[in-house]
Image 1 (cartoon, one colour):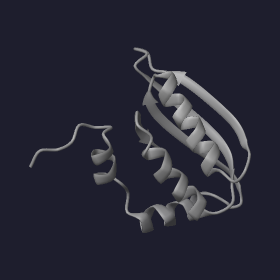
Image 2 (cartoon, helix red, strand yellow):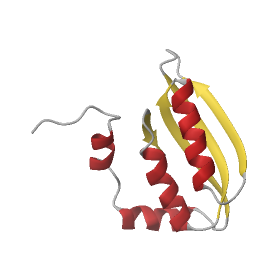
Image 3 (cartoon, one colour):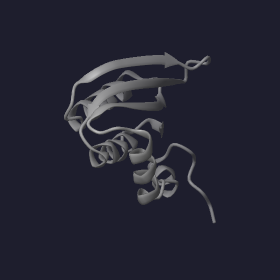
Image 4 (cartoon, one colour):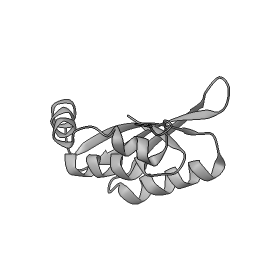
Amino acid sequence: MASEPPGTPAARDASAHDPERLRALLEALHRFPGPFYVSVIARTDADVEAALRATIQAAATGPLDAWERRPSSGGRYTSHRVTIGCQSVDEALALYVQVARVDGVVTVL
């Protein structure tokens, strides 16, 4: 069976975490409502970053407290570390799903 290249939408969907396991981890590691930290690895591209920012701003009900970006040593990818106010575990899960769908996003942590 052929597999999709990493970072493609099909590969991200196929490798998605078990929602109940992810829910349990989020509930164990975070206090809601409160600050929530999201790390995203994406292609270094102005359009990808704009789409990522728009998606996160639209999905978050709380404020965007911080946004750090760090390009990879080769410059091909950029790590985005975002701190947002998040009201619930359901909001955090929805954010993961929406961010993973952005074209150019490789990984959401």
